Length: 246
Image (cartoon, rainbow, N blue to C red; front, top):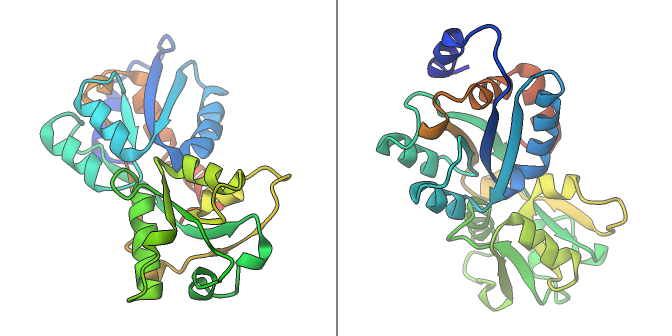
């Protein structure tokens, strides 16, 4: 638990009326966050409300005054900028997960034992990734593709979703033959969705370290403070790990 959050907890009264916190969460983590928010609320008087989107879009909303109490990004850079600018509580930032990539397709024949072989398949005509300008998972996917193919870019085959969720939908609906998306999204897909996947080697892209930050608006919000502390519990970290994160 970070020092700032611990100090804020110590200053809170032992008995309090429940409060509500509005949490901005990157799309890739939203399903896991909903489960964790439900677990938190089951033993707390507080309520957690979630708003999800690409990290880039949420970052812009926070800078423009969106009423969020905490930010769970899909990168480290944007929470660091908010903390440095005073929009976040100094010392409250911590890494809550490290993302993993997967190559996934509804067509099992498109998924080979090797990522490079899968990309080179003649059956692959449209490949979906999240927009690299908005989504860290898109940046990582582009890096992995470039590293695997070296001098043979797939630009002509790429289509972009605004975030990991939209990218997943492009593949699920058949508008893309395959996608390089968050492994967590594949782990949580509905059972009726068929297909196959392979995990993309972490050596092919920079680490996708995801940071959380208590925002200035949430500095006195007990629900936000206690929820961030809850998410740093060892048992909760194990849930995050089994959901497709490092």
